[in-house]
Amino acid sequence: MKNILVTGGLGFIGSHTVIELIHNGYTPIIVDNLTNTRRSVLKTLQQLTNQKITFYQTDVLNQEKLIQILHENNIEAVIHFAALKAVGESIEKPTVYYKNNIGGLLSVLGAMDTAHINKMVFSSSATVYGDPDILPITEDAPLKTPTSPYGVTKQLGERIISDVANSNNLKAVILRYFNPIGAHESGRIGELPIGTPNNLVPYLVQAAAGIRKELTIYGDDYPTLDGTGIRDYIHVVDLAKAHVKALNYLEKVKEPVTTLNLGTGKGNSVLELIKTFESVNNVKVPYTIGSRRSGDIASCYASATKAKRVLEWEAHKTLENALQDAWKWQQYNKR
Image (cartoon, rainbow, N blue to C red):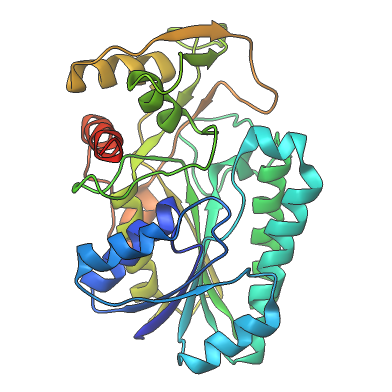
């Protein structure tokens, strides 16, 4: 495999994966509609990799254009990131999420079928587990009804991929992310939300930088040690490297679908995250306690032993590394 289509390739995880693909001898072809990122990310990626990168500004819902791109670039596999991803926003705008996330996946799969491409890496989420009964969460854990439309789109997306793979020669690796944070060590690419951030760490760094008045912690009455929600925070660079491993794995695997958790295997509370950020960056984070948000759960962290066994991958970067890199990214953005 050489040429890889990366949908949503200018987004947070997509952009970091593009760098890792290039470092490992692949040629990424990016499709992105720039809904939640900026075209300037492309220039930065080219500077960081010293390589010209082919980019198409188009929506994955435009299947005709996707088919054209797949043919023109002799694509051999697709990494599908392109999706809306905010739990809270999905509760407010469910139809937008269903149209974009499910419609986009169907469009990509249809284009792949037309172009006779049979390898996919799919960006899924730990939200497919809903509120787990047992921690850490293994891939064998039952899939409960997700607590948000975003989670439903990921769960349904997995089912669609499995059905397609079992009906033709599609081979897919489904990667269930836990909570990606951090930024590239250069500080030049990171999580770049348009408008008010929906995720914790981008809001936290903006509060620390004085861009936001304060960070709101949604609930301090969960059944955890300090009352705040616990999540498995994984450095985005570790996450990106797993996608390269998944592509390598697709070259030799015989099973139609392989599903893997990507996490550190450890949970940290929101308050632990804030205290760690303050400690490693020597900066205070103004915050207040708010009420719980609809769709949030108390605790969620991964068992990542299957990914280590199947992909020979594991997370190496620490929470401290991730929060230092996130702050470096925020400081770079002030220039």
